[in-house]
Image 1 (cartoon, helix red, strand yellow):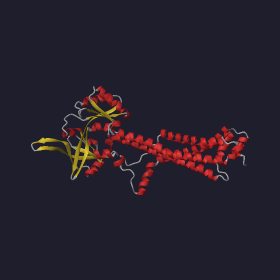
Image 2 (tube, one colour; image 1 turned 90 degrees about the vertical axis):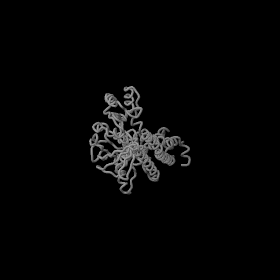
Image 3 (cartoon, rainbow, N blue to C red; image 1 turned 45 degrees about the horizontal axis):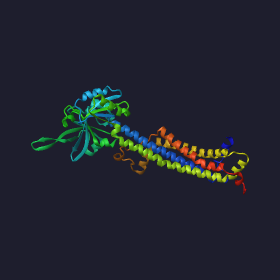
Image 4 (cartoon, rainbow, N blue to C red; image 1 turned 180 degrees about the horizontal axis):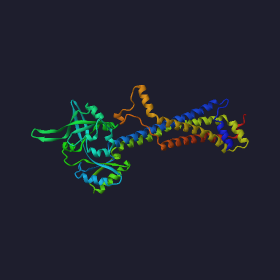
Length: 413
C-alpha cells in the first residue's frame, strides 16, 4: 500500500490552491480534539465526585449495620463477638442513635445523637481522626461531653468548652404533666468530615451517657461493622444475621446511599451520549472535507484509474486521509483531557479567586471541591468511539472516490 499511503498523506498537506481544504481538515481535527477532551474531563469529574463521595461517606458511617427488629439490641455483646469471627470483619462496635434538639442560648438545632465507645470507635471509622481541638477519648463515661460537626457548631454558635442543652423527644410523666427529658453537655471537640449532611446533623456522645439520657439501660441501637472490603458489606452482614438465627434488620452503605450512586451512574451515561454529539459534529466535518477533496481531485482519480489503479486502492487512499484526521484529533483530545483532569481542582480554584465566587455549595453538592479522577476504561472507551465515528465518516467520501468513472471524469478536460 505504498502509493495509497503516499496519496492519502499528500492530500492532507496544503498545496497551491487548496489551502481552504487543508484548513477544513485542521478544523475537523480541532473539533474532534475539543469533543474528546470535554468527554474525558466531564466523566473524570463524575468519577472523582463518586470516589470522593464514597470516601467521605465511609469515613463517618460504617460499612454495615445490624439492628433489632424492635429498634434495639439487648444481647449485643454476643452479636458483636459473633461478628468479629467472620472473615473480613475489622471491627464491630455498638452504638446508640437517636434524634435530639440542641440548645445554646437563643440558638436551636435538630440533630442525630450517636452514642459510641471511644476506644472502639477509633478502630471502626475515620471520623476520630477528623476531630479538631479535642480527641474522641474525651467522651468519658459520666462526663456528659459532646462532639459536634463544624456546621452544627456554627449553627449553635458554640465553641469548645461551651455548654449545650440536649432535649430528647421522649418525655417523663410527672404529676405536672409530660416534661421533656433534658441534659446539659459540654462541647469537647468539633469534627469536619467534608460531608455537609453529617457536619450539620451529627453529634457524638459516650455510649452510656446516651443510654442514660434515652433510658435504654444496657441495650443499644445496633452493631456497626467495618470490613476490609467495603463492597462485600451486603453479603457479610446478611451472613451474620443468618448465623445469629435471624430476627435482625440489616443494612449497609450501598443501600443507605444507593440513590446517590445510582444518580451518578445515570448522569454519567446521559452526559456521555449528549457530549458524544460534539464528536459526531467533528466527524461530519471530516465527511465534508473529504467530499470536497474528492470533488477537487476527480481528474487525478480518473488518471490513476486509467493507469491501472484499482477502486480498492482509491478507497484505501481516502480512508487513510480520514483515519489520520481522526487519529490526530483523538490523540490530541485524550492528551488535553487528561491534562485538564489532572489540574482541574487548581484551575477551578484559580477561576473562583478571579471571579470572586464559589461554584460548589457544600449544602447542595455535599462537598465544596471539584475532584477529577480519569479512569483508564473511560478514556479508552471515549477514544475508541471517537475514532470509530471518524472511520465511519470516511467511508462515504472514499466510496464516492472509488466509484468515479475515468471516461466520465475526463470528458470535459
